[in-house]
Image (tube, rainbow, N blue to C red; front, side, top):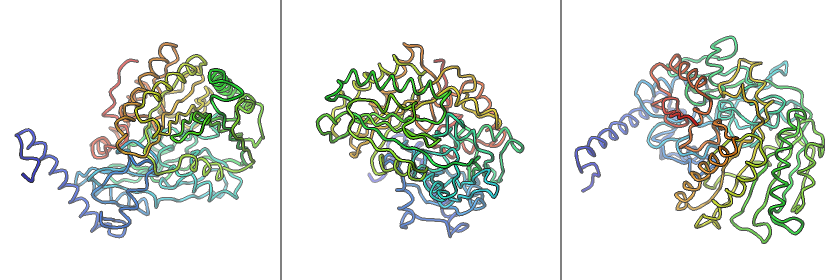
Length: 511
């Protein structure tokens, strides 16, 4: 029997629907190939193959029916009109850095690859930079490296502008400037109708606010204008320490690391220039006492070397290596890219806790239990990051019309925890999916026990089964749904673009 749809009636119905969708996708690709031939790429082309493989994680590589790579906002508009008219499912890729399957690609539908929308322009008055959604932060920093200009942007060079500019966005300036979205002055967006609009504090102010955290629910963002400022450079310090070493045993090191993190986060409300990214690394090929390492990425946006705020991290025992330099954002972002290069398989999950020593310290031990329980842990690079989210970070949103993250009334400093292990063998995907779920479950359990759990999670770190939009709170979620209905009344970005976290799929329960 050649056709797997020939079993029972229910199966035949499901298969018929699948065949209809495949037919729609095929017709859609045919229409696009005729109307937008110069930017259309079929599965037998090298451009298609290159496009679908330009993903940070192997878990995100899918196989669309065709790829289009617009070179202008008008071409995006034309493509959306054809896709919507034919009711075809589609995906949108900016940088392709999210590891969740379907987040930036699609099986069988149309992939809109924005990588050619890579404009990087500094305004004549130096007040803002205009960035194409398909540019990477590395390209943006490279292009403006000699301009002595700064702007809140991603910390990894190969991340696309689109994701952080719609999801929140962390940067080395977050204690002084807020989220990346809090510094966006204008979004250029293609709506479901194909209409091109500019959303800012004056025009489409509701859409402007909704886009600042609302992710892929409203349209295709093609360009963002981000506020800029004079910037002379950044001090970078990278400190690696063994978690269990000759100078200090494991328990002492974990206590010191946790205390240093909590103190730096709380101090960020006053000393706004020093930032840390604390990374736990258990490499798949360990060497003796280097089996468990903490990587401490320090930056000072005022270009002050070894700032006092970082003293506890700089004084840690069991040092393996330390490097520091006065540099720029270009070098910093590309350095981070080299630490976690593309090509592995990745897993995402996120949790937010109050800035609390007891919670964070207990979580270290619980995460170790998950790692130790992996049947094939020697094939996994076990990575968990702890990132600061000081209270002051939430105070900047109101200056430019607010955002939709729901954090304006947060009264505590917070820490964002990002689960991001890497592995090569696809046969381990099931094992790592289970570890992902256990990370979320145990994180919530420990945080709730200590009264430090926050429902908010940074959407770019969320696992597919998590509900980051619910974490914005009922009021923000209602606003997002109302705005989506206004600008996308037919729900195109809820149904035809399944990737990302959708408002119509938000299943919120009291926490």
